[in-house]
Image (cartoon, rainbow, N blue to C red; front, side, top):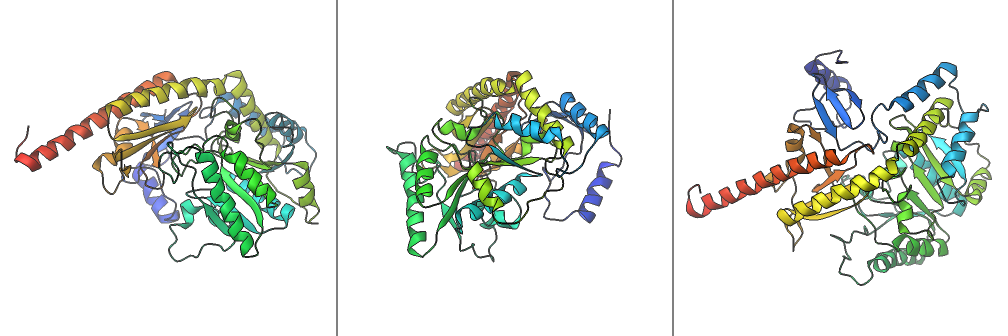
Length: 458
């Protein structure tokens, strides 16, 4: 069955004509036209099925029938803004809060992860009365102006734009490639001390810290897993300076890490952020997001005298969909599946690392996994699109009907963040194709070296 309205070429021509050129498309050299999806699979206009390893948005699976039904049934009854009293809003807030530490009890519903992170900054600035924000190297928090300022992943590409004077960048807590690595005696403390040093420099210049913000696990930054204890120590330094800790769960929340519902909980039960932001998986593709904070921060925000109003945030349809997503996660044990299948996938990739020197590191939690490609394991020379023919990895996988993306500061980290209904059979298939590509790439590389050295073909 196809839901194609226009021929693929016509669709592409209209996109080029009417859609902004900054809006990039996956596989731009030969884009896929997706017309329908179900579970962990997407289908093009010809009915070809692709295994989706990219979409952490379709959290419980594309077009999950329970989620679709909940949204459709509520839409038949009512959809209106949250200034009218409605059960769905409070019931969803209650269900969501039950997954979080008790301290995090007040919700603000918005429509996207960017909107959530922008509101989190407003809450922090109002609560503290301070202006300075600390963010992480390679961080990405969203596309609105306030978030480009705190997203080095984005603003480092803007050569003619000066960094906001109130934004300070701390080293990414990357124990594979970063400043302090796995062989450091205490990388968590070392990275946290760098944050403490930044706070000291801010104070010397007369500034005051409003917030430290971090993705609980860095995604665009290269699937980075902070060392245990890092967030606790950073939070201590930041709170002593009068600031708050914002945990960005937009990409990694709702059970993706397997062992916990929220990725910040990987740091330990003694760590609780002051503000948590959510998006992407919260509505399984429906535009919905949330900011959850403490009563104290919420009350300070109200004291500003400005009413906060969001037309669509928390509408009855969005909340019905959000409730259905939570139900499916529990009913289908998707958090448990993320743990089991994620561990299996990681084990398979570790075996590939033993076999292929191009794999420098495998890291992740649950179904949030990264595989970093390097040309030299000792020097950690990244295998990037500019200097390695085998980096056409994602293109090669697409030819095998598997959709995977790459990211990180050197664009050399393959990112696995599929829908949580991903299976062990799916993991087998992906890793089998990766093995074939790496084996072929290594063979081509050896042939080239032989030709260079002896002028022939072995």
